[in-house]
Length: 66
Image 1 (cartoon, helix red, strand yellow):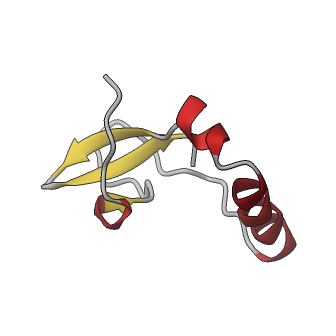
Image 2: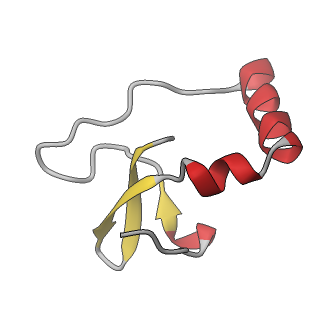
């Protein structure tokens, strides 16, 4: 099901959910800036390939697309 969720309610996967290991990738510096610019240049991409999140304790944990 596709729905919009306030970005302030989404947390990165730090291993909070039993059976789901934390995301081993950490994007920073130039790679992060390139991603930010890519989203600014083509924001429609997020509409076609959104984040996969899991509800957890009143918030959402990103489990795909982060």
